[in-house]
Length: 114
Length: 115
Image 1 (cartoon, rainbow over the protein chains, first blue to last red):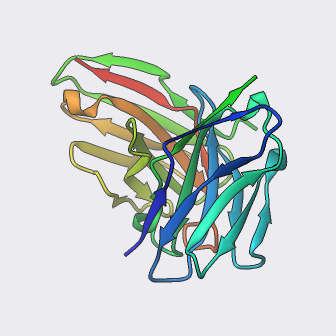
Image 2 (image 1 turned 30 degrees about the horizontal axis):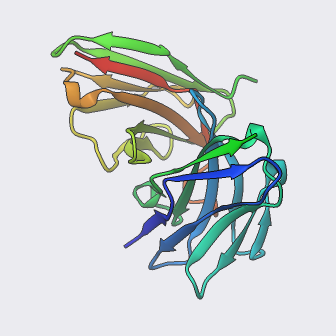
């Protein structure tokens, strides 16, 4: 069985400080892992994805995530937050060949304080 | 190149009314999906189409039907709308379900309210 847990429903940071959005997963198979971002009243956009090629994955807008199999985690980080990063972020786990095994986390809303 | 488009953007229905949500993609993708998004619940898969000519149920299919009209278009129909179907609906497409780390591309969403 697969599951994904985003540990914080809301994170608030000051502009220019680091961002950490936490995601833990559970999967019976080798998973693919994704982070998507959703700006207000918009669709979802891919930030980055893990495909087993490298454990540290770099994405768009300065975000990166590290796959840690021993901790079953795929946390999203950014060294310095920008006001435009304010959005909802979703961690997603999937297994090849089964759409029914694409599981979205419940989302983390990131707020940026000036 | 518009990506994934959805119509309408907003819709208000009365209980029992029917409607069809339209979705089209211009990326020549094989797979298409319909999700609903409710507060605090992430996205839940309603139906998907792995390839043209096939459709399958997702996590929450009850009360919905779909049609994969051709490779580009995938519609979602509510035959008799209920207030529990008030939600934001997203269509997505991907190159091919089954590929490693197949990335989904999302439309802008349809905000549906059922009174």
